[in-house]
Image 1 (cartoon, rainbow, N blue to C red):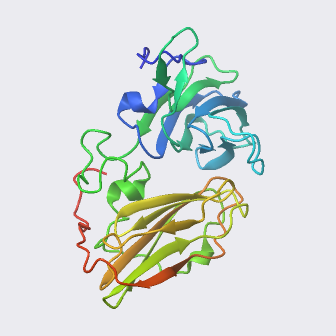
Image 2 (tube, rainbow, N blue to C red; image 1 turned 135 degrees about the vertical axis):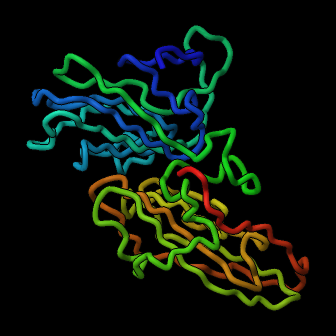
Length: 314
């Protein structure tokens, strides 16, 4: 895309890589930049924009190059920015003769409004790659993009709504939905996490049997923030109930109401774990807790948690 209606212009690079222009306005987005190497390219410069506190991961072929964070450093929670500008150096022997692929995975922390310089109205800032440059190259990568299945118009889950899913492959395939057949998956513990940068899904099921006549409040709890750079998307019976950001927080407790949770039946919990850097993801704890119990309550609460169905295109 060589032009845009967005008044916030690209910094550099031939094409506009604004995710929403391609129909991907919500959730994580994956970009793949293809180029033929002469062997002389030392690095790529990327300006990644995802909103306040966003994250991004960058690879050359299957070699992890580095992470981008929408804050001034991994541990500084006081200075938050929307766009990063970094040069990602190619390690020795990472370039392949001929075709190569630069992969960028970033999330979208919301479409904030900003004043576009001379424009007097407040407009939505872009999300995507606002600038790219392959160093010491006579040509620039050609890009492909993938996000939420169906984009913002043709997404399949009309019950849970437009904001529920993102561009992870597991989301597109419906791995977060109750009823998905995970019998071929390996059995493991959540504490295995991820050893390096990447995305991994963890699924579990459990039953609840809450007696009537009580108002019972429950929540899912992660470790206190500040214990890693990973992110977790929490799905309860297919519903996206929050995003845990280990290095920024501050939220680590996610209440889930009756109706989403089946208080008298089976429940499916899925964690889409994204290790944004080679530090991996070390999830030291995750538990469902009862926060309070009161006599009374509203009586039975209806649920509408559609089960997994095969999707035509992933």
